[in-house]
Image 1 (cartoon, rainbow, N blue to C red):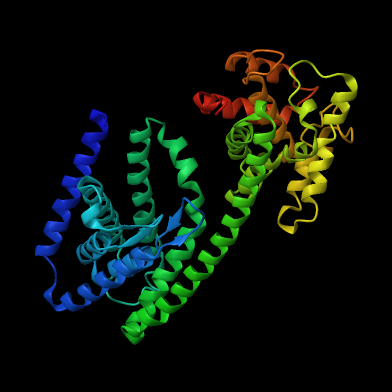
Image 2 (cartoon, one colour; image 1 turned 30 degrees about the horizontal axis):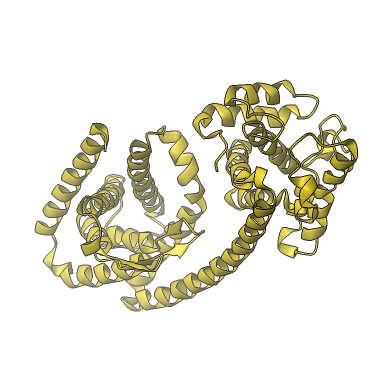
Length: 422
């Protein structure tokens, strides 16, 4: 770890542990049973995250922690959130994760940053005139929303800073990549947290039961959805591996195109769901080559006109393979059109300009760049700079101005990742 990273982790841990210690010694003993019960509830919620995709999850404990700071104040909220986080038990890729088998500095950082974030939200709530332990609606709804915002985004900022220092990447780039998708989840969980506060004040601990059962059901449905998605990805990866086993010159090509396409999607402002579909299209963009005979696919020299015309049919073949899969109804067109040119000189349909979907243009740029920086039987790989120039110089002919703008921005921000991965 770098010195800057060590100093940052140390600062957060010292600050967080100091706050937790002070909070414990200043707990209102009248609320001690409430605090213990909410700690258990927070730990259970931390242990049962909702998975957005295979790498990203959302803990519904945020709603519990928000309720805690609105009901009991910043100190009790910090204790509930930090100890609840400390006691979590999760099954991560078949391995049980809990405090005793997690590196101590990670555990200390996690409980420290969550304590600081919750307490900050609580202090802001009080500073703006919010009253602890009373109905937030209608008099204190503004204060509660501001408190929820401070808690949520301070939490994200502290974690993003850690990751950016760990990976030695700019903060904004890291936040955009890993956390910018969280806004809709923040709005949902903030609403649940405020609603839980109202129900708790009205009906007591029955509120925890009322909300816990639906949360478990939501988690179960998300898990079913994730399992279904995983089966799609497993099938897609099997097709990709089958193609790469047949075409030795494209080893790793689909994964590289996927990676580059994601960077362009982010520059285009695509949602995570939209980007995910482009990723699938990138993995499948050459699936039509499965039907091409190997002596042409792996020919060591340059192709004849007849052979090239034969290979060009892979875009149509890919479309035909995918057309009956409802999940891929848009992907099939992007696969069909990823060799079309802006000036109409591409194939298979010779469409031009805005007739070509932006997603197909993104696949095209990513496909061409990776092909250029890869060795081929008839030439050596171009350098990254040479490939960049070739693509930029093709603006107005092969590529549209809009996709070139995306490509330039993506390249400048992620230059080190614009390479062929084996």
